Length: 602
Image (cartoon, rainbow, N blue to C red; front, side, top):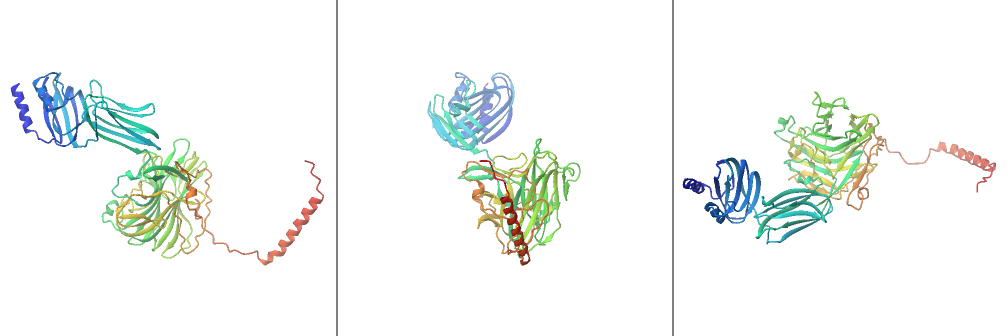
């Protein structure tokens, strides 16, 4: 026994005085123990866990308790004691000297264990019989995060009225010194109560946090964001999310680009030109077919070759219903095709030939959908050039109109939803954003100056009422574009990127560019498409807060605007005929009424 004690003391003398983390294994014969000193100079949380071949006593003792343990005074179980073959625990240690003890009290065991110390602070102390109480009154569903660590046992409960949603307390065999638990709760009044049930004052480190269950774009952690304007279906009311839903037959993006030049020397590794960049209008498409509803990520992309001042238009449709969703050249048909071209592809795409552009460049791009009964869903990809170096009396051009074949479809709509997230996208959001030229590339801009706006269509254009400065689901990104609000539009320029919430009152309209832009009436067959906007927890609807425009996107059948009709009277040669026709009508009316029988119904 003296040799064993000498070995233990030697191990203690060689053990580092400030233990931060340890992960090791050991074998203890029946009745054998090991212990390690923990010198705590500031308040710290000790996290420890073990996995053993048999029951073992794991104890955290102070110096007096260790001396009693070594002397065999009273019970061998001292301090904070847990008897188990496998366990994880945390305990709050205030400044002092402690010992971590492993004791094979029944049989020989081989065990692996880990120790870790991290700094903490005492949030409050509770004398015997006292309690700490938190009150929450939230008007939206939320996640409640409870993380509590103490130097001795405590109990905690979460209640609303007479209903208990969570409770934890020490048992006769196991202390309770920490709780790490998450609850998802409905709107309402809640009470979180922490009680000291023991016989001495306890110290508690407490972290009680809550967050909305609604999707939070600001929680997204990306290095390089696509920058521009995006709607997530969320108002931000003093930090409180207020969601809404938009279902629309069309989404329209406006862009005015004064200058653009990009260069990324590593882009060729992604099979992309170093000088390429893109402006993308992207939005989810939901197809309701009464069986397995489908979700698609639909993209109308302008790809710029900034060193050549050329651009092309590219359509893209991805099936994002679930992780295993695919497309085939039979399930979707258009001018393009499904890639990869073998077996089931990942996405459908089509790209136009390149054309020259000049700045200032102003244009509209749109995505519009319509249901063709017993056949499927038609997706129209369109653009309309308003200015290309000089003002252009442009018309809508539909460069692609693929058909998703689905005979059972009853509804289809472009969808923005602040309440929920899809399974394989981050958000149900609409984005008009700048990024790399493709394949997830990050564009680095030598210069860029542009203004943007994004709208949805339901008979007239409505700007999405609340917008952010960045996209979340577009793969391509950038790291050097700064976004701000300017004259009712979103301004994008070279500078420090700033993925932020912009405004709850986005009232953009399409600027008039020195000429009257021709009106195009939407004649798409959208009788089966629901176009609504719902605001929850707000007293006004979107339509009452938005500026209405009269430049709707085109139908899914290619069409051009006609020239404006000149105002004026009828040609002179038609006037005599008109006079004779009026006289004949009057004579007939007199004769009919003269010989008409009286009406006897009183």
